[in-house]
Image (tube, rainbow, N blue to C red; front, top):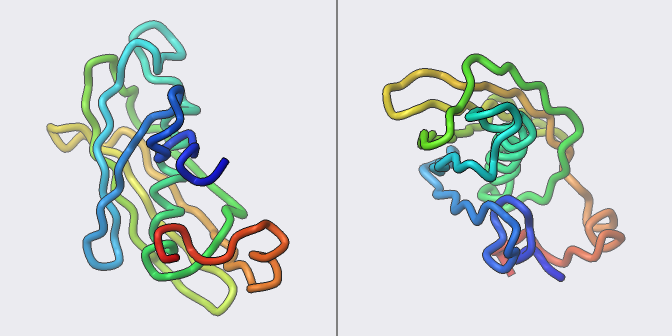
Length: 143
């Protein structure tokens, strides 16, 4: 199984979220519609879904830069609940880039502009040897 089965962005995962991220310069964007199957508390999106969406957005930033990374840290601030039936916009952009680390800021807002959650991620850039050990030959979408 390849990246097509990714829980967040894979289009072949029948249980996944099937989110499509779009590049805009160094930033990435996506939308997500909360359904009843995404709840934790009644009528409220599960925090794990919110976390997964922000993590995936953070991972797409280095990917679009031609880098293969893994998340080392993900710090999330939940600002307001995402309600069932609500559509949110997810965006992420790099905040600092070093040779081995990429820092990414992400946020989730509803159609009225209310911030639902924010995150800061520290992504570790994998060396060619680390990529080979994981079975990754090239950045996803860059083969």
